[in-house]
Amino acid sequence: MVNDKKVRVTVDYFHCKWCEACVVEMPELFYYDESTGKAAAVSEPVDLSAELERVVSICPTDCIEISDP
Ligand code: SF4
Image 1 (cartoon, rainbow, N blue to C red):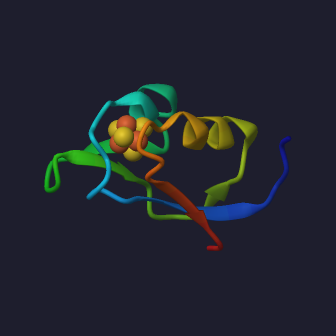
Image 2 (cartoon, helix red, strand yellow):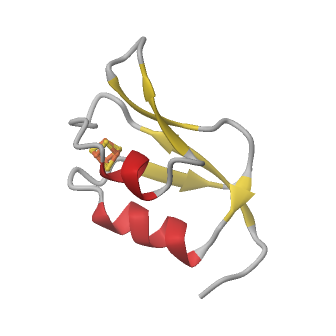
Image 3 (cartoon, rainbow, N blue to C red):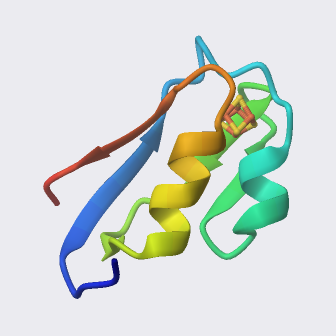
């Protein structure tokens, strides 16, 4: 389902195991954070797309969090 709802995306880097999946799947939204050695997400609100929901679902440690902007 695709809609125009805006959400804030954050990565719980304590639980991220840097499998790279989110960065490979959505490089426009996720990136490698040198300061933590883990994944991070852009800070501005983004559209809650079907692709984003899919990436959240494939994170092996379930550490990508979506919240209201
Ligand atoms: S998919 Fe999850 S565990 Fe893998 S790099 Fe991204 S946030 Fe970390």
